[in-house]
Length: 181
Ligand SMILES: O=C(O)c1cc(=O)[nH]c(=O)n1[C@@H]1O[C@H](COP(=O)(O)O)[C@@H](O)[C@H]1O
Image 1 (cartoon, helix red, strand yellow):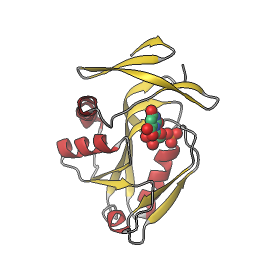
Image 2 (spheres, rainbow, N blue to C red; image 1 turned 90 degrees about the horizontal axis):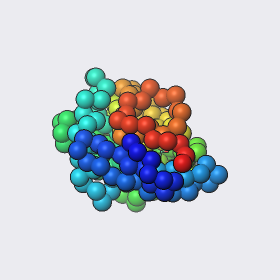
Image 3 (cartoon, protein in one colour; image 1 turned 120 degrees about the vertical axis):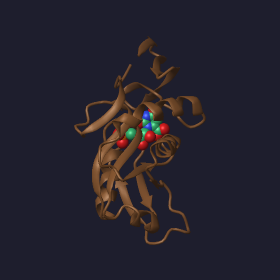
């Protein structure tokens, strides 16, 4: 990882290098912006590198829209593990969804997660690994863990492409990003 200036940070995953732009977030300062959506080459490199980090015993992956979705798709495809997706908006077709507030978000917006009932059923009795693009405060990860428990599953572990900040979750990740630049 190379800091080019306050406006960008160069990261390399596998043989793919990207210059992440930085964005201003509240009073925190500038944080590097990781975008997997729209970048299959970067997504695929990260998914491939994350395969050995999947916690042993994992039976199902759980992720949340939007940015982590292509990553979870690729990890699922490469590992053969099924994946389940929490949404951030209610959909009219949802049946008995589990609704979970995310207490605080690094990017500055409070959010609510929605897990459709039939999808929650796929977590019941399973060892579930939570997959994210970035874990910062850990608020999203904790909300996803709560959904696993409410669905009757157990959390096998937390897997992220990048860690940013000092959350004390038992997280496996590829690289650590600076909290602010
Ligand atoms: O696109 C995003 O939502 C996102 C971009 C980014 O550069 N960094 C980033 O942390 N996020 C999202 O912010 C959430 C992590 O923040 P915490 O809940 O504070 O750990 C995840 O849902 C990420 O998808």
